[in-house]
Image (cartoon, rainbow, N blue to C red; front, side, top):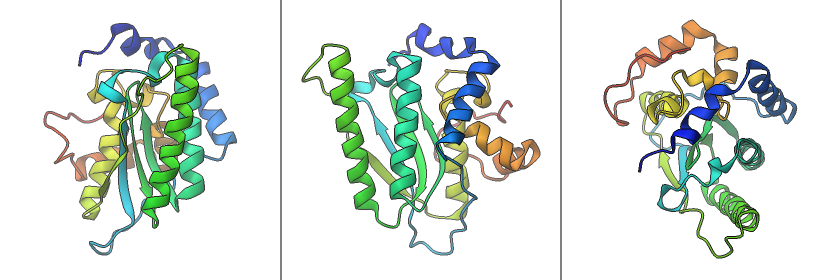
Length: 209
């Protein structure tokens, strides 16, 4: 589905001060990116969870404020219900998260409640009562350490892949900048080169910082 050019490029007009304000708000709400986990067996509690808007309509991306508010609400839910929130990204029509969720069913249940609340609020704001906003969330278990790190790379670079920005650190609605601040540019680039995105499409170039 073609992206709306205004939705795609308005994020690039954000000033460094605006981006820093969003980053500071997340830090004030205690949304750190935790240290990477080490997978010791195929029996894991590490998952990528993905949810998309119905028919991939950019309902989340209706406004900058909606994107920011939903990002905060999503992180609040996951920090409360999961052992760790490793990486996340919110785009105008879907989101991805990488979590340690020993109890997966309660995690999906809480995400379902978040979807219900956001649907009710957004449909009210747009006078669209009865509109279906979300598809169900789906999880993918991490099969190996390589799969885990490739998924991490995939999540943080998803805005570039979908054409929303040129550099993954430009996108304000993800954990990319917290990750880069914590591990440093060189380490992030080593992880990118060591764990390419095998299962997530081709023609992925090294990330721009």
